[in-house]
Length: 277
Image 1 (cartoon, rainbow, N blue to C red):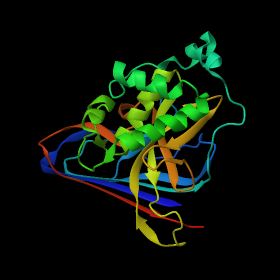
Image 2 (image 1 turned 180 degrees about the vertical axis):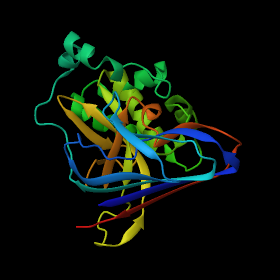
Image 3 (image 1 turned 135 degrees about the horizontal axis):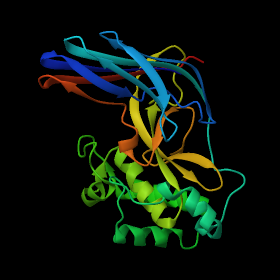
Image 4 (image 1 turned 90 degrees about the vertical axis):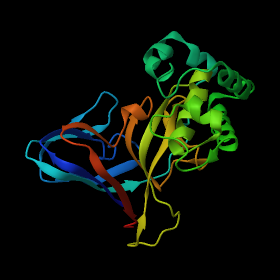
């Protein structure tokens, strides 16, 4: 699959300097995908450098110090993808509660800003997991979220927490992921947030470009990491391209930065995906 993600900013007047980070490069450490090529371009041109952040996401950092009234950032990638699923070797609840595993995954079982603790949802999590093994509990948590929530674009924002989205019973993929993470962490299952892209067509024609989507799902650790998409109630597969991973959305925004100048007047994001084989 080829993915082209373009973000454009327009400003009311000249911006004299800006400092930015882009997380637009697909994960090379994801065992179900192979990155054939990937680059990040900007207009105006900038000098960029890359590093890998604490969570393993590739970051392209760049700054611009010439006056400019617009900024376009484009990530272009070609990725081979496959289907993922639960690991063959799984752990039980006693393993997950053991001190070595709790210590190893401590940051991925504790509350965060967008995945806070909630006693009522923690009870839901305990009830769901009561008679299930950890793998089955992951499926049950995602199914519960899918059934309880209504997918309503625009009903939430990037700063909406799982508890806030659940209160309104509406949200988008980010909220479905956050709410599923809350349940899994309440069960004691290490779980992380994944950002990336989704091809909207399961059987797309080769060479035909479609309007893609920025997307979010979760990965759970039950002996090894594996992905599940609670928005679509499906295993992560060939339509998914993973880019960033972290505790919640705050760790994986596609673009973030600061600038000196007047306010922005326009912000446009376009994602195009093309099946190549």
